[in-house]
Every structure is written in structure tokens, then in C-alpha cells.
Length: 468
Image (cartoon, rainbow, N blue to C red; front, side, top):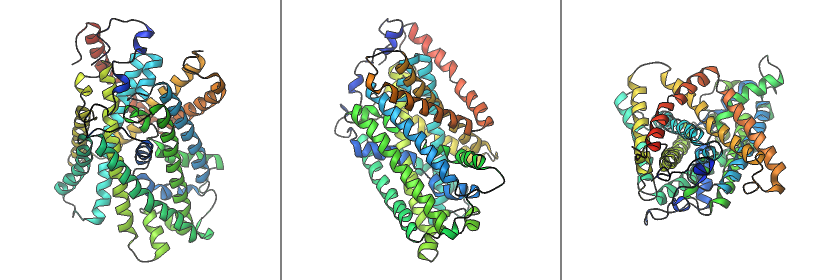
């Protein structure tokens, strides 16, 4: 179903919601479809923000000293500004698609398509990366003995199980997301809070490490930490599946981002204070070292491996849902192939299947091609493609605020929303800069590779033909 069959022109054409927009969520999908409440929506945000990176973050920023905590604070402020902007946008457009919807509403079909295309690339490449990283933790619990076949099978299983949960319906997606978030949040929080009781300031090391100045150290550590908050848009992307989205999307986005920030900060401080700085700098498993230091023994590696697997499984479950939502919204508007608009049990099934197949092929390529650095380069590219929808969304908010459209902006909140939008735009731009020159260059190529797809879909729509 698309809006192309109605011969409208101009800005009003693209602002006309697709038929059934406000009922395009889980409703109508039968007993296996269910809209998410605030707890599940919050768990979706937290689960997608907190993947597996938290288990390496303390060691990654340790060389820069405790000044990296200043970078954490700055980034948290930026992420919260972005979360609040998504909440404001969701109040106006409580529809599945999130950043795609906002960009299209403000700047037209092409901007909307670029947002959808960029986000879609991010999701399926990131899913492959999460599965590969999860296999590394699985190897601690169930040694694969270096078998390529066993490793590939494990990575594919880790991708297809969340996909099957998604295909079973939104009620199962929500259940898996809520359980996995609790299972990973509680033990991580216990380690983070428990570490404060074993805190030894002698383990902290210098305030500023290396030869760079304080500002340089903050910037360098921030470049590593920048991508810890990718995923704050999760509730907005799935707004069509959230009950009372005008109210709950914003709340879930802020609560989920705050929860992730608390866990990041407490966990990093706890590890800094329990593991000697010299050891932490070279650690490949900082949380394991912290658990061993706190309670003795060598069981920390097994405990952290279990937490990491649960964390990544939850992230894969949430990202699999998001990977199908944006193409679904674009397909309803005739900007993606029509097959992506097919839903069953509240889930865009074609989007889930196409995404998991592409991620599986990329995973197999990673293990069999033997091309050093290819997979890592693709993953780095996604750090750029993920920020394109952020920039377009915050620009859309600035457009709504500055255009004087009083039907879309509350006058009493104009100044506050303007400051938040400006901060969120700056944070998004910082994300782009932090991804590096190579990632931006190659990311732009990935982005523009979608232009012929847009040209094809737009031509078919303008001729009055149904989307492919």
C-alpha cells in the first residue's frame, strides 16, 4: 500500500499520512501481535544501546586516564538531547519509521529515502558484527576449537534465533527484549555497584594519560565512546508498535538512554577502581578482571561471557525488529519495494528475512574470504551511516521550529526545543567526525549507491505503476 495512487503534488502530498497510518502497529495482527508498553519500549532502547561494547569500554579509554569520565559526561548530555528531540518528533509523528518519517515530512521523499536506506544498511551490517563478536564470547563457554564450520554455524544461529522470535510476532519480540534486558542489566549493575565497595583510588592511574593536553585526551576518548549511544532512536523507529506513542516513545527514549548511561558510567568507574591501571590498559576482558579482583578466583571470565552473550542476544533481537521497520515505512510510501510493506503478526516479515539473509551472507564472507580488514571496514562504515538519520532528524526538528508552523510547535517550548535540537545536531555532527575520514568517504559511497534505487522507485510511482 502506497500513497502514490493519489495524484497529489507539492508539500501537502508528502505530508498526507498513508492510509491506516495510525493503525499500522501491532493491531490487526492477531493474538501474536501486541503493542509495546512503556517497560518494553524502554527495554528496546536500553537493549539496543547496550550491546557488547560495554565489556571492553573501560580498557579502551584507560590509556587516556580518568579524564575520559569527562568525555562520558559530555556524550551523555548530547545523547540525552538527541533522545529528547526524538521524543518531541514522535509526539508530532507517532508512526513506524522514526527518522525516515521525520526527514520525509520536513524535506521530501529523497531525504526520507536517504534516511531509510542509510539506517537499513546500518542495521544488517551491525547485526553481522554483533553475531561475530558474540561468537568470541561463546567460545569461552563452549570452545569451538578453531573450527571454521562450527564458528559459522554458531554465528548464524545467533542471528536466526532472534529473527525467528521476530517472525513469531511482536508479543514474542517484546517478551524476549524485556527478559534479556533484565538478565543483562541486573548482573552488570551488581558488578558496577559492587565494585564501588572494593574501590581503591590507588588503581585509578593518572587523570590524563599520554602526551596530549586535557582537551586532546577528552576528544580522543570521546572518539572511542561516541558510538556507545547508537540506538537511542529505537523506540521512535518502532513508534507504530508502541501503545500511546505520543507519550511513551519520548519517555522510553529518555529512560532507556539514562539507564544505559548509568550502567556505562558506574561500570567504568568500578573497573577503574578495582583493576590496577597498568593491568587495565592491556586488558582484553576488563569486567572479568574486575570480578576476579572483587571476589577472587578465575571464574570472572565465564560470568562475563554469559552476561555478554545475553547482552548481544538482546541487542540482536531489538536490531532485527528495527531493521525491518524503516524499510516497511518507506515501502508504504512507495520508496522501497512493496514486498517490504508485508506484515504478519505485527512484524514486517519480508524485511526481517531479507535483513537476516544479508547479515548471514556477510558473516559467512567474513569467515571464508580471508580478506583482512574488509569486515572491520564495513562495520566502521556503519558508524557513519547510523548518524545520517540522526542529522536529518535533528535538522527536521530545527526546520519545524524555524518555519513558524504553529500547528507543529508549541510556542511555550520554542526556545527550549531549539536549544535541544541545536545540541542534538552538534552531537550528531560529532558522531560523523568521530567515525574518521575513511569511514565518511566509504559511507558516502554506500549512501549514494541507493540513489539509483530511489530513481527506479520514484519513476515507477510517478508513472502510476505499483511498487515492485
